[in-house]
Length: 166
Image 1 (tube, one colour):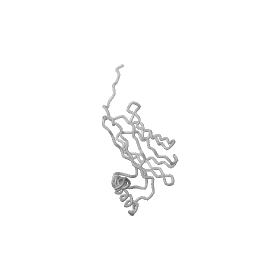
Image 2: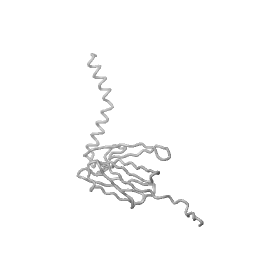
Image 3: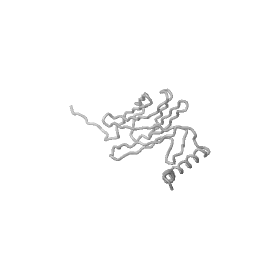
Image 4: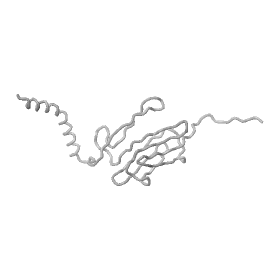
């Protein structure tokens, strides 16, 4: 066995795991009913919640099975609560759309975001755990970033008030 034969054997061993990936990709491409256009994307963000525990949020149009599962993309969304200023901010990345193409609906304990411009289609429903003043909603959109701000409602604290004696 010469040096080239040894190299060929080593190369074949190194490529063995990738042959399975080629087969999986071919099956995905040839299966009916699958999305055949891209882009395909998937990601997650890790933040620290108010209780100090990590919060992992997934986004994208490719999930654990690594198969495209929807026509509309799920934008990356972050929900920020500022207790000091009593504001809830929802920040969403939706590049490639115009501000007049964005629809925002407050549905009780959730916010529905949708936008569509040609091939770019976004849709997501964001659960809101805090009580917000729906009438205080203000939205801005610049450079692909949507920011929606709400004033937080005061919790149902103790009722009553002090009365001063004159």
